[in-house]
Image: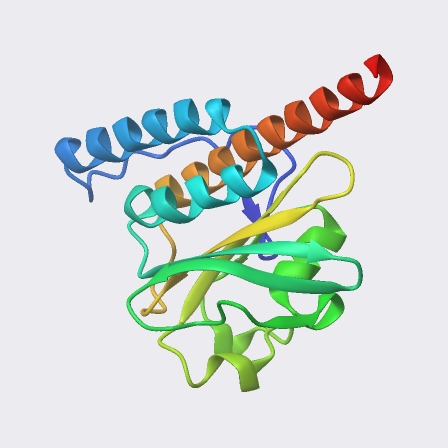
Length: 191
């Protein structure tokens, strides 16, 4: 359930079948999600996890763009993107002034149907882009280490399926990032 621009803390957002999307499109999205989840489970590094998200998420979410953002102390670093026009790849921003950073600090997904109407959005960073609406999900259990953002060029409400899939991608990436971290800790103890 979306409430006040946030996705609830539940582990799965119910999909509402509105009839607006064909069964073929829905099947394709979930097939792509299944393949991405499998690839995420095979990733051996956090960088690998983030790259799989970058190359998979846009098609799964049917968005106009996605970004993958890594936390670096009190900054966020846009480490990858796939979009219809350039966004912020390679740039760093203070964590508290960026929606990706806010999602990480608050440890919850953020949904913004119209960027012009949400005071959390730093409009100076967005007005030169195609972005009109967006959703951002943190990655990492406990203290998030990254986030994935999805962007659309229209201000229409974001599809429930897209929000469900974004949440699932973030949770799958979080689980694999934790496995990678735990594996490194075990190797350190063994040596």
